[in-house]
Amino acid sequence: MEHYISSRPFHLNVIEAACHGRFKETGHSMVLAEMLRHPIIQASFLETFLGLKYDHLEVAAETDRVDVSLKGDGIFIIVENKINGAVEQDSQVYRYVHEIGMEKYGYALSQIYVIYLNPTNRASPTDFSLCDKNGKHNAFKELGCEHYIVLSYKDDITNWLGNLTIDNEPLIQSAIEQYIDFLESKFNTSLLDKAMNNEIKELLLKELQIADKSLGEQIAVLENQRDKTEDLLNHLNSLVVELKEAASLKMIREWQKQIEQQLKIKLAQDDHSFGIQLNNKVWLRICDGVEDGDETPYWGFYFNSFRKDSNPRLYNKIERVIDSAGLWEFDTINDWIAWHATENGIETFIALYHAAEGKGLI
Image (cartoon, rainbow, N blue to C red):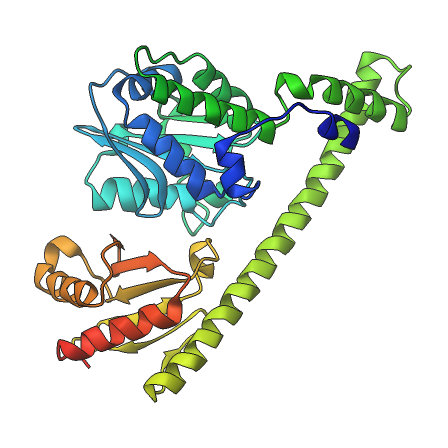
């Protein structure tokens, strides 16, 4: 298909130009969240996919580990973004519903909605993601069919965006069109790809020797090949995750070694993290992210059974340490007083260590 690619007219997409095909799911979540902050786009999104009408909901991206959330009086919407085919995480949807929606923000189950976004199909997530650690209490069954929906970016999101019209705001309309163009290129669904897709279709029918078969026979053979391909992709995805986990762990072990050399201290460690306990029993840690299903290292202050609203003095003390270290962007969740992803674990940990030391916590 290289001759189709080489014969394309000049084409510029600013997203593609910036990311060179490596646009992470976090990036897509940020784009979706920014769009949903626009009142017309948000209203269309809610009515199109959930049949809801609300004047305004607060939008957040990558907060509390939730890809995108919309929060308002009596309503909490969780958007789980799997556009790049990220593997399901253990009890992920269940935890978001119960630990974030219900426990942290106090919403009732009847006030919570989940929108699950696949790349190309509407296949529901499995019990592995939907149920609790014991494989029970399926979150979708608890919510009821009117409170969750599984969509695809290729069809549903792209089509929804294509039907949006934002009058008198050319920059907003242009941004939407650029994102649509990026998605069509990603899924090979643009008009430029029509001839190539037809050739691929003919090639598949020929290679599988089913061009002269009945439609029923063609479908049966293609479904069989699809199942085999999906099985192979599952193995490939598992291998990619395994290698990412190994790379993340290797990285934080190297960080640990260099930090110990620079600070001339010995740090505690477990299978996925290292750190030091402060005088107030709070742990300053660097984690590889594997246990959280992200494989992205992060720094954090951890205290067993921490709740921000029940222990504000502890939170304020740690917040002052973080501020003194020159870090202003962080999140809180469950036992974590504060945490945030980092690619500069050595500098970040040392800055937090010295800040804690300056506050008399070491």
